[in-house]
Length: 307
Image (cartoon, rainbow, N blue to C red):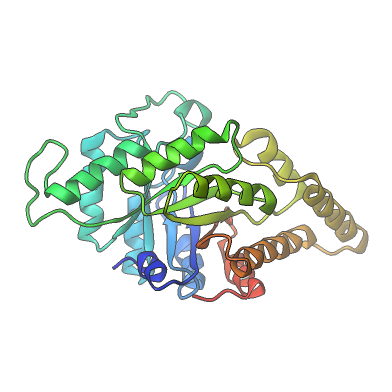
């Protein structure tokens, strides 16, 4: 059984981390980082060419993680594959014992590093969930043909953006995802808990029942926060956080100490996770360290979170 599903069914606080495959074929750096996460998280979510930037496939790194004894979560976008290719990758993932996935529509190639690539978008995230749910219910593939040995069962997830205007559109899309098989939801990175609480209230008011995991992005510098505010839809880092990071950088420069902004980012992320858990705001957190996965154990330790 999926470790994440097992954790939720036992009433535990779910914890996942995110990891990007390399722009190449050497997984050694990712596998070393993953060793530090083993026993600290319920799964390592492997991105699928995030931001439409070419990387090794999510499936490839997921298989490598699984072989190393680390629980992977397969990401699957509709941008690069039609329904046949998606189902083929899902069946291959099942052959390696991978049983947790996250369905995404995917950013358009024009925003990535291979902008001349043609997008597919045969299915969006809702369509992927619907297809896999039907596969599980009927033991048939996307063409209605019987699957040899029966269909695999996946613990299926999706994403949501709590900072969105009008938020009703995200609530409606969330409802569609849950109705079509999403059993857990990971949010875009959040930085303001009051805004997040208002989003959760709207989810409750809409009668949507699912496991929600708050997306946590440990900030590394004020420049990173400003860049995300300007370029990443759904991200809103409060100005006071940016000011604190800038002040930490100035202090570090004055004292000749490196890494103070990153350390502050770790502390802010840990504080947010602790509040989410202590106030029972949602069912877990998804930590997106963006290349600094080695910091995740320290964040969880400071937050007082164990699995």
